[in-house]
Length: 304
Image (cartoon, rainbow, N blue to C red):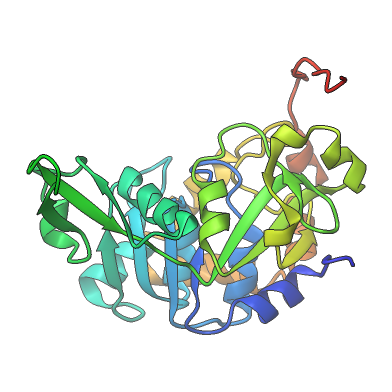
């Protein structure tokens, strides 16, 4: 049975107010910006945002008033530094205060890995001697029961839903992604539900033709959204490059509250949907982001 649904329906069905969502799991690539924009248009509230490096995706959700809590190792604009929406929320409570659970990239990955494994925590030596331990009350420092040496216990983190962007998926949700995948596989296994957004919707035999590349198996997936350019302005290897101009434009205009509101209206609310967003970008700008050359991997032989 096909799990393919429109983006609007997937977000309405699987991301209610108050949900804990993990996204941006491949670090600077494959960030599901279209899903975040749809949540802003649906005026979602009190979300917990979980992710290692979401670029300005988290910043836009926070600035739009969708988030109440952030569990992350970094929030900002990878290209320019500060995320002004995040800073206003933390420093001034605008549009409202948010709670922040501070992590390193590695402890956030371990939190998801613990949930994926079904264990309450994962011990590690990372963060010993750092001040993150003082800022995150959920991290515990205890002696190892075998050696007595100090360890940090990183508790499991179970998101309500993982929103993932991939290069291709079949209608059941089994999907391929290539390039850096970050903590995507662990996030999918850790979450109660998974929404997969794909550039290409392909027959199941395409996924089965290269089973080792399957990032998430379909039985973990709740919904599939076929949405080309759904990660723009972040890059999708083999499909399009990073649109640096968006990050520069957002950085300049989001420095003020009025500028942020104007940007969100112009590029998220007023365009109506993802199709409107792409129409505003225009075919010439999108075409310029396409890869200039192909670099195909060598085929593998699964014969016996």
